[in-house]
Length: 155
Image (cartoon, rainbow, N blue to C red):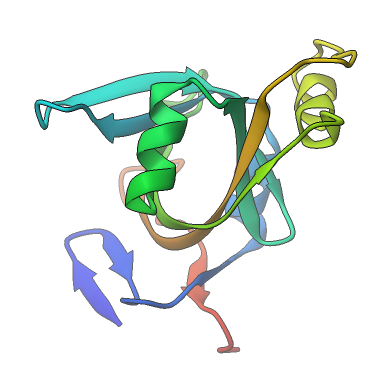
């Protein structure tokens, strides 16, 4: 394990998410994704997300720049913050492990349900990314409380 400040990272390995962070992921917050534009400057975009099967899922039309950038670099970084408690936030780093078309908008429809905005097909050109979490930085509710994450495969 490498510890860089409050950044927990296991290079090249996925993390397991404990019950507190899992509950935070289950809240319908907006994920602020960050990608680098052609000038190398960060751009942030608020998007819907889903945590399922130990992965984060994002969905967008294939023309979305953030989606194209994540897919081409294979990297993902996003930020979540609790609207009621600024000491409850997470910055998540990960790698794109799957990029697929969503022609029947199955994954996008789940996001619509999650965020209270029902989605009805057809919606052309939908694509989803599955992100494997590799590191988490943040606070779990107080200045000293960290998130419950661990190296995959460890007990």
